[in-house]
Amino acid sequence: MVRILFISLALLILQVPPSLLPADDHKTGNKHQNQHEIREEHNTHDDHSGGQVEKDAKGNEVTGQIAAWLLVSANLTVVFSIITKGANRFLSLKPQTKSLIKAFNQAQKKYLMRFHFVLNPLAFGVATVHFMLSSCRSSPFPEGGFFLVTAMVVLGLVLKFKVAPGWMRRVVYRVHTSPAAFSAVILMLVVGHLMVD
Image (cartoon, rainbow, N blue to C red; front, side, top):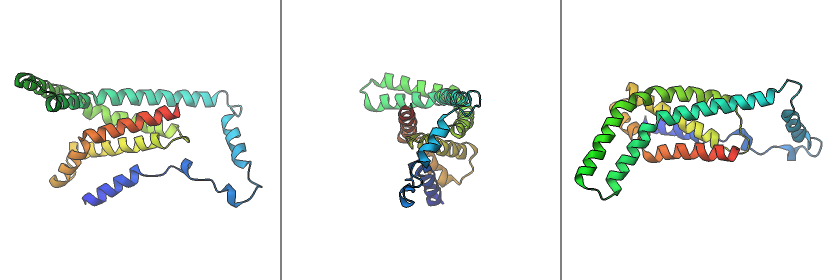
């Protein structure tokens, strides 16, 4: 069952978007050579729709901003936890300071984790709308970031509602709470959106 889960997640993450696949214009000769250029020129014009392209771009930007801020606020507790655990592990601190940092981490989790549970699915919904409204032809990173966010949300829901057997939840917990997975999601989203802009 774990193998099926990991294979499914890998297939979700490693999908190749159609924009990266090579066009087959070279097979048909020169008669369709300019068709791709004409299509792109046609898509960039307004087509007398009264500013439709600009409206869509602003709508995509608004949904992206909302999703980003929701993700940041929902995962603030995760950032605090990673920083405090890292400080306790890698800094040479007095035992009193370490226990104080540990107490802070437990308190912030107690009060902020409820927002994590509510805001992340909400952010995922807004990110899905943003994903459907947007298309990126220059980089696969935004799509990859969306699929990583999808995987993290699904894993989080599996943990929250305990829909998997105990042995599987331990593996899911390790993946979902891994700083490497969290960093990969953030890196994929940030790099992808920087390449697009």
